[in-house]
Image 1 (cartoon, rainbow, N blue to C red):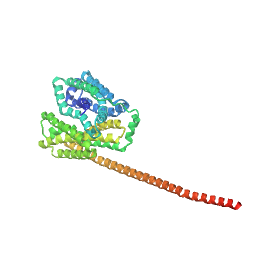
Image 2: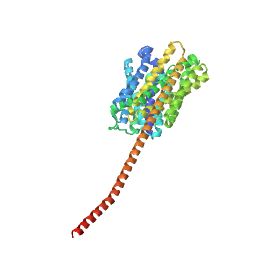
Image 3: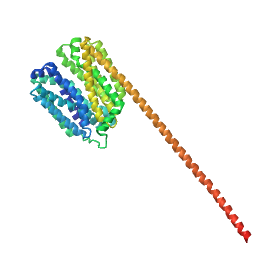
Image 4: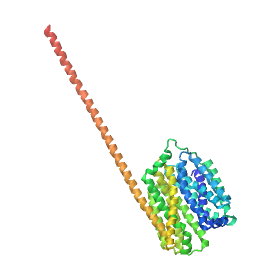
Length: 441
């Protein structure tokens, strides 16, 4: 494993920590700035929206620059954003720090996916991407619980100081370990990168990401309520149950990357189908604590097992312009998060209960599976058409070569036949001339 992947994973760990740890610290932050829960919630919602904006806008702005330099610059902005949050004297300043850190999120994972894939052999690309995202999953397993505990014991600002330090460590690692990846000046550029979106498979890949991953996250958004109000767990056990969920994320991300290296379509079909099944079973049996524990781990595992494959699929279909498409897929993950949470909230408001969010998640994953089936059918049809066209062209070229060879052979034979006739004709002419001379004499 290249050490550069470790540096990218540390960066992913810091970004994942700053994204998720705020949820556990939100009451303390709200009290510190004397704002209500709704206003404090925008520190999460505003972050997610900024991720989507940065994933496309910031990525588009840096397509012509050396990718290593872009990643290090993004990490500088990440450090600055969290430093502002740690020092923020007012709520608006805190929001500004969150937005600045979030803008780097999507671009980092989008560009980082391309960098990670270029560090290894073609057959190991999905595994390399999974390694980078392992930092994000580790943040959920270890970072969020301990970051929340640190903030509760030493004040919420202490957590952001630690995240700032992690950013500095990642910056040093990327500056020293990640090899230079200069932009290809003869490459597509911004306009060329944008042409990837003319490919229908890119849009279908984005739709699969929104639906497939959005289903899992929509169910997870309200998981604390499901665990306490439906499964009957005490509130004090929720953090430990979330560690189990995070363990599933970590394992699923790793195994999903290994599987996607062998076959992206097959992996996505299996994982999305299993994810939908797990959430449906979870919804039907959420009153059983034993089943809930198992389902929680499996939901995290299958949910994050989709990530390497989803990222690889869009990069494959983007062809020679993967950077902007990769960033757009990171935005799609966050759009799915928001959509899943919104739909889950609608079912709760409608009085269908907290377990209804799991049914919503299962339905979204099935929808993602249907879109994937359509996409793969179209892709296979396109490949078959291309193969037939290539075969026809090859047959036509072969026939042309044979025709030309036959014509050349006939021409050669014609020349050979013409020479003896000319010689005989010349001989007859000579004899006639000789005979004439004898008569005159």
